[in-house]
Image (cartoon, rainbow, N blue to C red):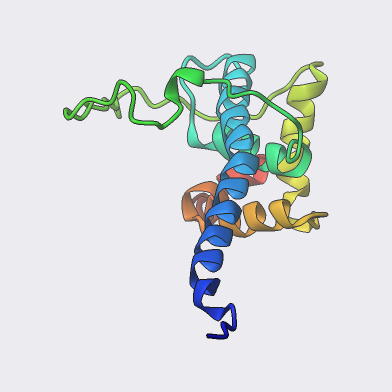
Length: 160
């Protein structure tokens, strides 16, 4: 009996999709982790005791523009997502709306913090240079929370 070889194409396609998804996660995870840490550093440099959405907006834009492709070990190795340590109970997230800290951009001499602020201003005109940056920029632009489209109406994003 002669075989065409087409019978195993579905398995090859599934494997290829799995490899692509894993590669995308491997590229994006360090960018997201770095953005969270950088956002906290930015808030701290601005004298705030809490991380605000604007801090994360600037940090994720900076990391997308300048940190994609940098080799990095996980900053949070205990949170590998392998199910280890997961409880069936959900943790409660507390948010104090009473403590409204006002967002202000960084003013100072730290080159990294100034670069983060500058990235917020330059992001709209920035053109990605590789597919990973294109994917991340597209995702950021599609996410109302990150782009701050609600903030734009109030004029608070002008400070970036």
